[in-house]
Image 1 (cartoon, each protein chain N blue to C red):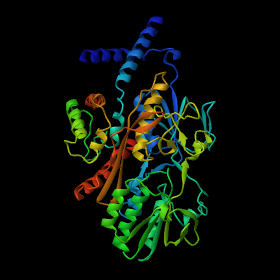
Image 2 (image 1 turned 180 degrees about the vertical axis):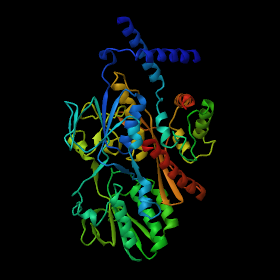
Image 3 (image 1 turned 90 degrees about the horizontal axis):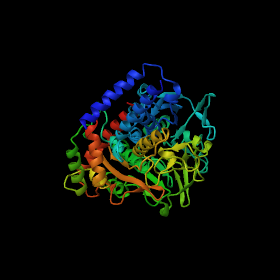
Length: 96
Length: 423
């Protein structure tokens, strides 16, 4: 019984660690204010879930430098560092 | 990475079969309880984000109304180019997430006992409480403006019946009438809202009642997206819309509802239709819970949104003093998700990490003419501060195609955010 309990606690802490690593990194949760989380929403703004990590990074860098035309993303991209952009892109790439 | 995921899959299968056998309750621990008060953009977003972050958290959402009426785009309803039904949402999908939606009004909070009481006597114990009560009108702060006066001179600053009242008054007005809007001093819900409203009323008057005049009496000398609004007004509504700033006698010092008169230090304006946007404060429960300070708004920690006045109570949305973040629906939603992540960690003994938040706020100057302001925020010096170099307003020299693109984006934003919060 004690052994089963220890195993259960062990599993719970591993599960908790996995859940924690699946948490959106700083800034990522805010994107869905404009980028639809749902596939049922019609919008000219693309869904980010499942996009290629490198493509998101590239887009953010181009918005930030002004080489890609934008209405609002140029202003938003300037608020994120390279490391933050990498983390957000990596997280969205794993979402579905 | 792949092997790790497979390993995890095996473990979770093992875990779920273990769950078939009786496990002592102390091993599982009691589910953390979070109560969220207020089902607007902040509260409903937070309730859903909490369940998403950790489905073990028992989330109760307390909301007075069965139907939520959204403020963003409600100025288009007033201007006659949108219907109120397009602003309305219910809580069925929120409840389908496993959130207990408690229809009722929170009337008391015992921060020591960690207990919320509803008007019907129901008592809701919590481990963490999130207050998202929006705004309350400061009745009487503007002499002559009380709840009875609002039936004559609508504020329409909480969407619903007031929105329709203002629209009907405009529709009933004869061509050539004077419409007056009074805008309050900062801070208040939706900083560009009074000016978007003025724009869309001017759009209506220009098309339907072109001999009419619209005056905006302002308690300020500057406002959100000012250069963009003023350039658009000069282009679209010359001679129709006049903005009177504080320094030119714009500050309304009293009103008389019976005659629809607005009094300033410089004179009196007798309107055919008067829209008084009055001074505001955090929703009532904030004061009851002891989380509002002398300003009427709620100071919070910029990482967790926990009240600086009461432990265990978090405040999000319009009610919060969120530093550089404006009181907007986008900001409320962004704060809600940040707060949910922090609360999900706190109730399981974890430590919240430093957040980054965004605001994007569209205004319509005409149905096909949109402008925006954006910002990125992070905790700095105990406040939420602008990330230097980021954010700002739409370019002042943008071509008309950009303005129509932003009008399309404004409506797309509304569909997206309401789908996330209520859909």
